[in-house]
Length: 315
Image (cartoon, rainbow, N blue to C red; front, side, top):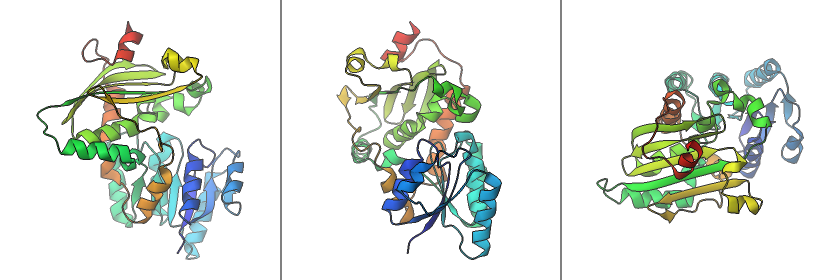
C-alpha cells in the first residue's frame, strides 16, 4: 500500500531528489510547505499535493489529516540546516516518521533530545547518508575491514563544488544557520570516511574560511588530509579550462577511488531502504556531526599533515 508524505522545504535545492524518490517508490505526496512559492517543480511529480507558504497553515492541515485518521506516514525534511531539529520534532509529534536531509543537526547534543522524542512517540527518524549505499564505497569499506588496523592508509579527499556570489548572501553563508562549509557540503563525506575507516581518533583544522576549509583526520584505518571549497578558482586549472566547475577526488595510498558515477542518484535507493525498515537512524549520524561540530569550534593549526591544496592557499 502506498505511503503518504509531507515535504518541508519543497522550493529548496535538494527537494527535487526527494520528490523523485517519493514518486519512484510508488508513494504519494499529499502536502508540502515552503515560505518561497517558486515550487512549480511539484507539477512534474505531484500536482494534486496541497501546498502552503505559512508554517502554521501547514501544521493545521497535517493535524487535521491526523484527526481524520489520515495521518501522514512520513515527513521529508529539506529545510535549512538549523531548522532540521525543529522540523523532525514536528514530524514525530504529528504521528509521522521523518526523513531528514544532511546534516541531521548542527550539534551532537541535539541527537540525544531527538532520541527521547523517538521513544515518546514510537516514531523513527531516518536520514539520508547516501554515500553508505554507493557500491564503490561499500566495496572500499569491505576491503578495509578485511585489513589490519596496524597499517593505516594515507587518504586525500578533495571536494570543490563552485557556488556563485549568492551563496554567502543566503542562509548557507551564515555559519549559525548552515554550520559553515564543512557542515553544509562536507558532512556526508565525513560520514563516509567514518563508515569506511572506522572510529575517529584525531581532528585537526588547518583552514577555516567562509568559502573553503581543510584539515587532517585520523581514523582507525586511515590518515586523511581533506580540502573543501565552493570557490571555482580552487578547481585545478586543467579542469577549469575545460569548463568544469566541480572537482571531486578520493585517493588512498595514491590510488584513485572513483565514486562520481551515481553520486546524485542515491536518494531513491535511500528511500527504498527506509521504507523496508533499513534506514540509517540517529546514532549512525553521531560521529559525523561530532566531527563537523569540532571543526567549527577548533582553533586553526599551522603546519602538520596539510592537504596539498590547503598548503597552496595558506602559503
